Length: 203
Image (cartoon, rainbow, N blue to C red):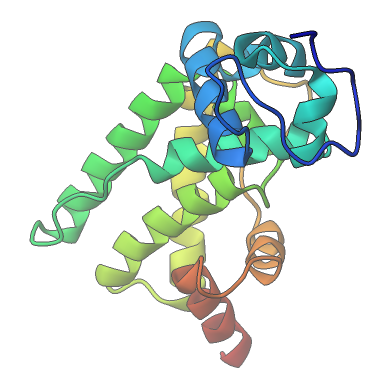
């Protein structure tokens, strides 16, 4: 059977295993590559080769590479299990940050992507998990934002050890960036971020 020609309007294609190709299958294959080559080494060309399809078939499901990385980053961060809620909040926070750091180190380039794309699914999930623990620890409104800023100030450089920092790039997640990111997301996906945003507005 001849290889399918490139067609930007192709709705679905078959991968080499004969299954229908969709976003879930593409992200699963992208995770395999990210584990081997690092998150920063993921490309449409490598992914197309892994799936034995044309790159155009991938663009049908993801309009550009950043959209793909957004989906992959979100899936990676979603894989982090929240620590036992019965633990004291400070122990939960420590355990969560360690789990996040281990995950970011496992996928070199992910930390930088989240830092440069603060409205991405991965970055939002990173913030949401931390804010959930801070919320349980009694941090509300501005106090929660300041705590998140402090944590990001100390944690982000550690996650970027695998990658040279961009000259002049501020490593902190600024308050306005957090608020803007929260406003851009559906409330059901980031309830703690939205609650923090609304609480600050009413203060």
